[in-house]
Length: 54
Image (cartoon, rainbow, N blue to C red; front, side, top):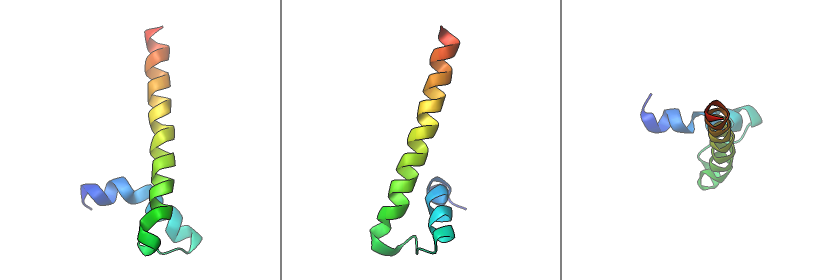
């Protein structure tokens, strides 16, 4: 597995589960899912860091 495949893994798995080709439609569905996933992960990490500082 390459680094790019690892980064795109959450969106790819969700698309496969929904029965949508991850490569179709220029990957917009996969991109949206990955963006939401990494947004949530990043916000949780920032929240933990801020809570540890205070």
